[in-house]
Length: 165
Image (cartoon, rainbow, N blue to C red; front, side, top):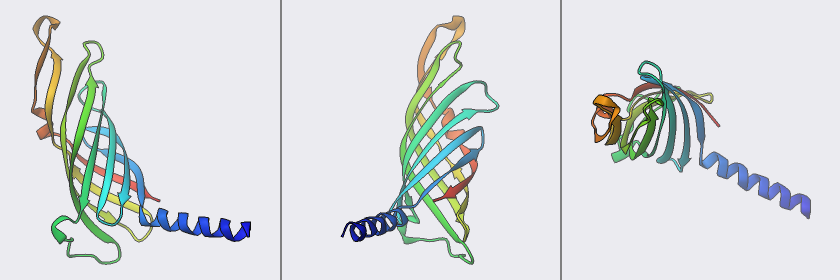
């Protein structure tokens, strides 16, 4: 009896894992990022991204977005051996930069992108994560100023590669 119960639990767990795919990988854009995606059914996912800037100095930032996959029932029309999907979502972002003067930002993030899922467990994507919000930065004389972060609208384009499991 215990043997059948164990088999039933493993079968249900494997179906649940298949119904909610996950992906882990890296993004390369204005920074180097770590990405984790967790699917909720076939049409929604949570995207968690942590990144460090490559060209603009030192720091760490992150974003979390809730994304809709193929929104408006408009899938990408050219699916051949693998599958193309596009997605868009909204969430939050925060980061700390320039550790000597402790500058930070926080705000609202958007997410739009297109991805190609191969017939084996690999995914390639092109994303844009615009963000707006508040920032605290060192001004003249190293006095900290609170301001509006609009530079996030012009950055955040990245290429991603993820392993799906």
